[in-house]
Image (cartoon, rainbow, N blue to C red; front, side, top):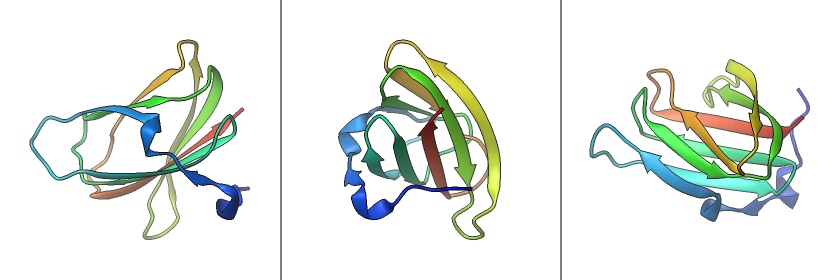
Length: 104
C-alpha cells in the first residue's frame, strides 16, 4: 500500500462535521489532510454503529480501516460522494482506529 507523505499533510479537524454517538463517551478525533487527495483520521473511542460525518470534495473515495497496533487493514471499500459530505459508520470493537481516505 502506498500511503501519503505525512510531513506535507495539515491538521484538518474542521473536516469533521458531526459525530453521532450512541453513548456519552470521551471520543477523540485527529485528522491530517492533503485536501482533494488524502485524509488520515485517528479515532479514539466510539462504539460500533456510531457515525462520523466528514466534509470532503465530491468524487470517488477509497476508505480503509486500519488497526494502528498491527498496521493490519481491517476493512476496505470505495464510496461515491456527490454532496461533499461523507458519512462513515464505525465498525469493530476497537477503542483505537485509523481511517485512511484516498481519492480514486
